[in-house]
Image (cartoon, rainbow, N blue to C red; front, side):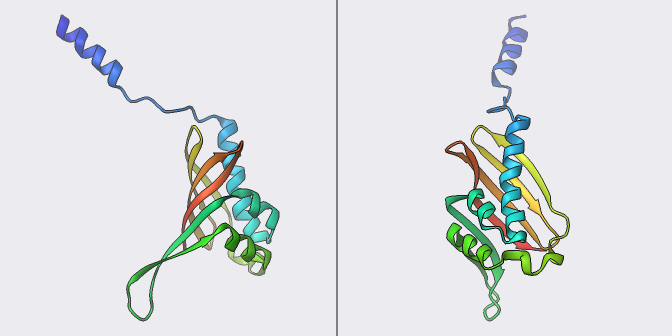
Length: 144
């Protein structure tokens, strides 16, 4: 009998528990930050782009160097993204946008993971709640 009680106690104590609840409000706020980023790009809207990005954003893409055939990574910053958006962003090619899908995979406390897709791009994003607002800290992206 003691063995059964000890086993049950261990199961209860060692069972995985979520770090923090993913509320509808937090999920919606994360989704809005990602929509500001994606839709800001396609509209050439600098205000939306700026508010969606953390000051230390790093956005990366893996590509193959044509001459060597080796994989490489290119990184850009928040200021790069803001300037590319100011120059028009995706607004010059709206036909490449297609339907935008934002999938909030997980929100735990002040961090979140999201996948955003359009007809042209896929972005894997990490966000943080920074000074009360959700902002994008890391992006790994590629063309489709």
